[in-house]
Figure 1 (cartoon, rainbow, N blue to C red):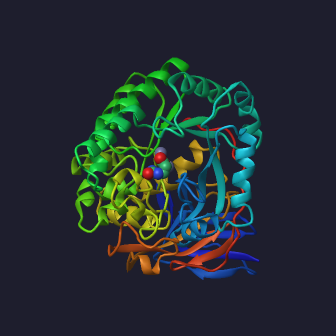
Figure 2: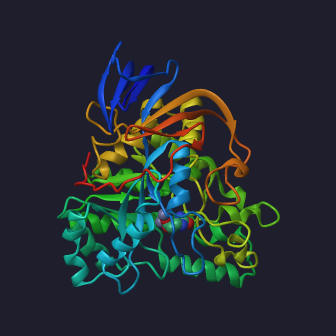
Length: 458
Ligand code: URP
Ligand code: ZN
Ligand code: ZN
């Protein structure tokens, strides 16, 4: 059965044009004007924008933080993703201490396979580096994993500078990329201890314990190590202007540094931590929310094409029963917030409609760049003949309100509660099949594993 999307505006990173799209099976068969296909089901999409299915390259589903499992697993997290227009997620398979990477990968396949409602791939988070793990890097490439994450903070996850250096060299040899959680772990520990010693236990102590320089120092150190290793790097969840300026300086010297930021760092700031009744606990994530001046700098980075991708860092914990574990001690609040469902609508409304970025830039940040950097292009991330028919039919006018009570995410709050936005995915096609409509999932469990290739260092 073929489907003909008629009369929409096809959006790409380089421009938009009015065209019809003919879907045959899982792929886009033709794009052109006044297409005709006798057998096809014709869907009138006049007045709608046709985006490539959005890609969220930063989710944590079914993650054990040592005390709690995240509220969203692959079943609920990927349903929330497609409901909001995201057709592919890259989640962080995380190696436990003593585990091989193959064991970690198998573990994540068990969590995701047959459960997922959008396509999915994995970055590998390495926490226990040694000579035999090094030998597994080419094995990971064969398994379709070409990107990694390391942590410079969190005592149970972080690695040393020499380990970072070795991982970078091993991954660069495979044309892969290493994303880094850039916070100086020692300084974070000092900051937490000092806040507590001063009697500060509320959520407002969280940003105080991890100031912007803690991120900036780690970014600088990471880039210095990468320079010596001769490796390109990705800075995930960039939150500060200070860090951004250091990256710009390194790029001027010829270094390949990619930047991911997230909706929360663009749209929310550290005033949230002072909300009464422990409401600030909802926003405890790392790095923390920052100042309005940081938000402005990050928007500027998007507008000037300095930042490359927008991921969510979706890491959801329920407010009741999980976040409130840290009601009397901010350092016990599980870190992270939900976002996978609402990223496209938030970026469209606050970015495109408010004139901060163009719809073509949104397409580049949420689809094309993620597909290129993480080895999925042109199968995904772009609407081309032969590409996967992952298509979002975007109604640019539909107004709606983001609310926990209507969201698909399996969590009892959203950081964006009550925000009215214009623009919504009216239909979402995953490899040719309509899987969601107006925020509701029509077909579950249609996701398949994305075996990714080498990274494109654009
Ligand atoms: O607070 C956050 N972001 N939790 C998720 C883990 C991470 O560092 O990305
Ligand atoms: Zn992180
Ligand atoms: Zn993360």
